[in-house]
Length: 327
Image 1 (cartoon, rainbow, N blue to C red):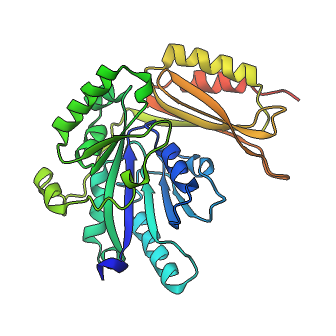
Image 2: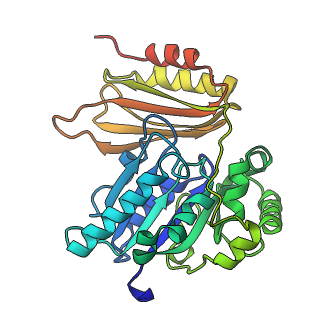
């Protein structure tokens, strides 16, 4: 029976740690695995589904309007059930599932799903919780956010990201801190979204007994809270944007409000550019790249998501609107 269970990887990590970049790398590799991906984002609109590669035949399902570990947990059970039924019927083919949680998720209730729901237990096996840790921003995140601590505490495998942005001594200090927090999780690195597949898939790392030592109420406690001062803001615009104006504004806003902007990312419709422009940032770090071409007849829309504390929403709306190319 065990051999027929579908292995599930929970990919977690705080906002901006590089989860989607790593997942894209995995989906592009010629490993022969057929992967169903379940995406969850914090806020009223998600874009990670659009950032993931769509040409490999994977099943990609997006869950919005809440955190996967609380308000949409029922949706997770429903989606997993529907996937298993379609797989049995032969209408959908996949042999493993990767769940990418929102950066604000506590992984415990997500993992709990695979032990307390009878239908899920019959079809799925929790292979491992893989946690990405952004070495540059993790010291502050671990100090300030309970979710970041939980993500490390429940990890079976920890992948350090953005190690190229800090010194070797900073990396070593973070390794020592993570070992103190979770001595049972092995630690590896993911450089620019690249990691060894055996550091992510088929780890067979989830140990229920070890988890019950950390959190004795794991199988019964379903409570979960978020910091109320963390909010999200979405900007949408179908008219093209001026690249120079948008870059100037974002650079200025990051200099002034970067500390409160925990995560920001988006897909931009730039005047004169036939491809999507993808931009991402964490606090003061920001970058952009060209994405997939806009398809013929496709609605070209800029969609930008900002997550942070005490965000200057009116300033953001006004500045972004001024970057619109007027007809």
